[in-house]
Image 1: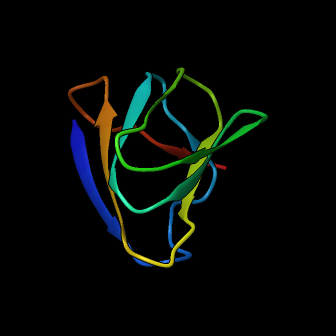
Image 2: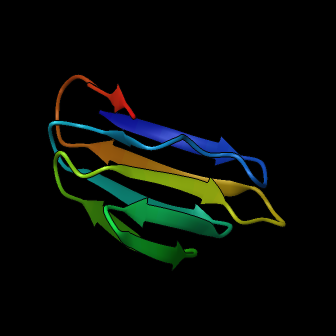
Amino acid sequence: SVILVDNEPGQGPVLHVHPYPETWIVRSGRALMRAGDEEIEAGPGDIVIVERDTPHAFRNLGPERLELVCIHAAGRMVTTWL
């Protein structure tokens, strides 16, 4: 499953988990990504992989829009919001 994200500054999903890994690829903008206890500031060209069952979230740091590709290693998206 693939999700194309286009968020305004400050936007992003709240903390959640999936029963499979998720890969984020930043196309433009800057994001603060949280995976478990780690926070990562990512920009264009950065790739972040979150292991299965790891609480994670991201937020657009601005000032521009955040374009991001989220790849779910499953045929169907399954999310548990925390």
